[in-house]
Length: 257
Image (cartoon, rainbow, N blue to C red):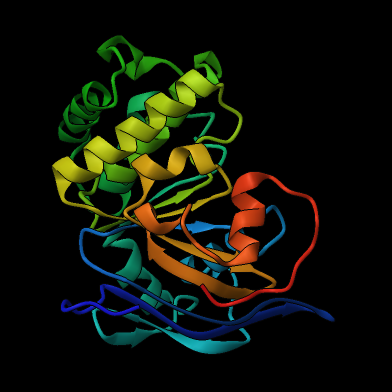
């Protein structure tokens, strides 16, 4: 997992267990500027736990993380602020604030963390609504009035509101029909390219991969067992990779590509 560039985010030997259940068992991974990396794995493989460790929502038992070569502890408030200032998150179920109108959801970090006046923040939010393909009339609606696909678009607009260096996407098409899933995938791809944003996606959706990722890391039994460019995924000789992408049910042991 190397590049001529320096990684924007590095994970080294990350471990996480819950009592006797070892979810992550030594994760080594690097994310490079303007790269689109998807972490692929079955449900329960530890994908979301890994994302929570990166975002500081829970502590790692062992291992280290580095942002632009500088080690940081995401559960420490000082370090988490540095990370949050540079990243945006598209949550699996959008995680909008029900009590706030759409524009305020999008502009929440601009107002609370960047101290942007509300009228300027609302203008930025309305512009982002147009970027994600929603009518500006949605700005004053509350989340309860939105469909699942509309909520996902608003969540994406909020994630991009601060012009982040890194966009984290947690199962971005969960709960959406195939047509809307394809629409969201295209939006993430086009907006990340437009804003030159690095993307780390957590997914089990094979269909989404060509749009979401230039590179894929396969997570199995707490370890990264395969990593390469997206065009080599279907050519991999790793039996676990083939089992997953073909939807087979038989169990195998991890092997090298």
